Length: 108
Length: 117
Image (cartoon, rainbow over all chains, first blue to last red; front, side):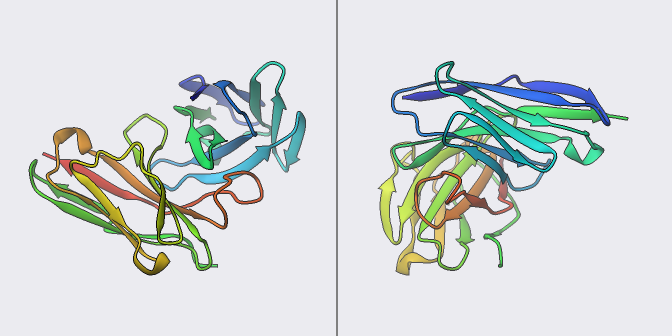
């Protein structure tokens, strides 16, 4: 089986940088995805790491270390609109398994 | 491109009643998923279709839940009879292929928020 662990909530101020961690336990790991979900909205895809290292997409970056069974999502220049839940997810046997999510609150 | 369409947006029913949700995936997406998301938790996969065939329904409570994807396009998810613990958001998603990786991410609809009283 597979499990993904994330902090339940994180708070940061506008303009700051925040890191959301995800640790996983798995038999057969292929990669790590990140999704954003605003309150009442649909989860939307942010990024995917299939290999170790950093992937950058604008203000968002995602990192994976297979040796440490660990990844993170880095959000820079935080804006109020970044307040949302962030989920790490990993493919297992052709299906996507999600973590419990981290609720990010951005304060002015 | 048009996104994943779901209806209804909200539904309130009493326990032991039945309810059905409808999903229209993105055109051309062969893989369709139904997820259940309980408040404060991550989405949990209920069933996955590849075209009109079931790939995985290991987490679907088959004594009360059923789903179909006739003609490999639209899908319906039904609950009969509903229980209080079925209160959740039911999310439909689709992808080109069933890898879930960066080349074929999942595209979600806005979901149906079900309240069972």
